[in-house]
Image 1 (cartoon, rainbow, N blue to C red):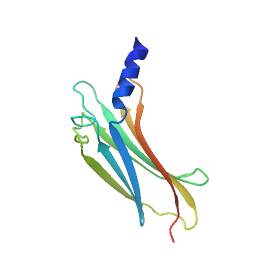
Image 2: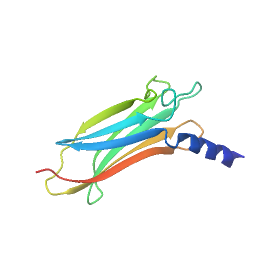
Image 3: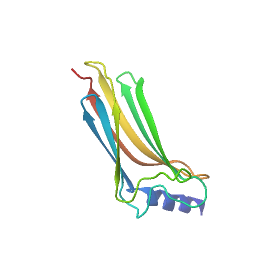
Image 4: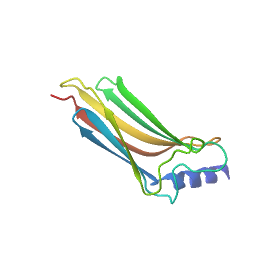
Length: 129
């Protein structure tokens, strides 16, 4: 029975969040959209329901050169409104001629349940001029 509940839980979260990214001169812009629910994301009455948006940039050697975590929490009253997009823009400084991997993921965290990846986005970029 427990396995069935986890499958239902995972199924409910698929397609709820959408992440897109865009590279600009000297910054990376990450957009998080609440696409699939008719209320704030996350939501819940009991406990602390959380969504974390994690953005990481690694160089071609796998060394992390930038990371940022944005937390949305029911206890803090923060969330992404239904059918709305929240945009984060992070200034980045990259070495000329070097290759980098930018990745973002949205994780759903609820007390007593495993963390689940709701959406991901990634791209390779080269250092500026």
